[in-house]
Image 1: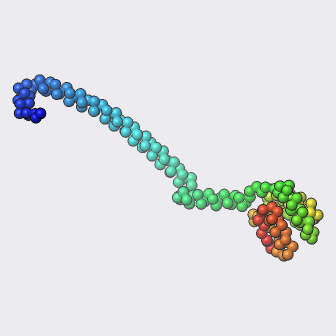
Image 2 (image 1 turned 120 degrees about the vertical axis):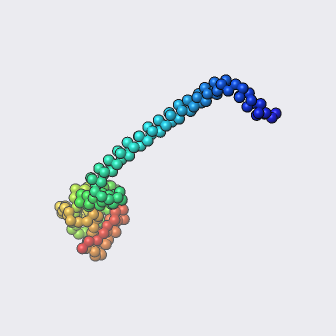
Image 3 (image 1 turned 120 degrees about the horizontal axis):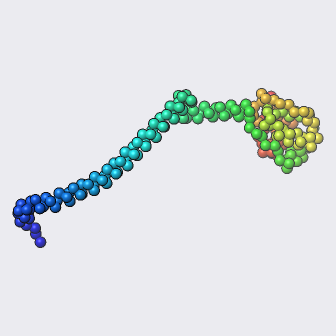
Length: 188
């Protein structure tokens, strides 16, 4: 079926007002529906944009406050500075040393009792090392060694030390490492 456009055009030309009366309300209805729909979308997007602008303003204020409080520097530099501060605190204050368990004390005492007895000086750096020092004292005394009062040695480095290095201290270091699992270094 082919459409004869010339006859259709002749019909519209014969009654143009009737066609306009029908087409204009249809066109206006379509335009009104589209306008209503897209106006809602546009308003919603304007709200999203306004929200993002508020977020950006808030983040800019937080960034300014961060820069004022922390000083200039990238997050990596600030992180490095915080790590140095934490290390300084850990070095100054130390961290808690767990005391030896009873089985470790018994095993250490058994191994130490095989060595020639000496006077032993136990030192700890601050209160965080006292419980561990007490458990070492218990093991040495149980093995028959003489352990005088404790000495607080705040200038010591973190760790467990024996020394100076000679044959007997090497044996003590090996026994302590084997029985406790702690790392022991020499000093002096």
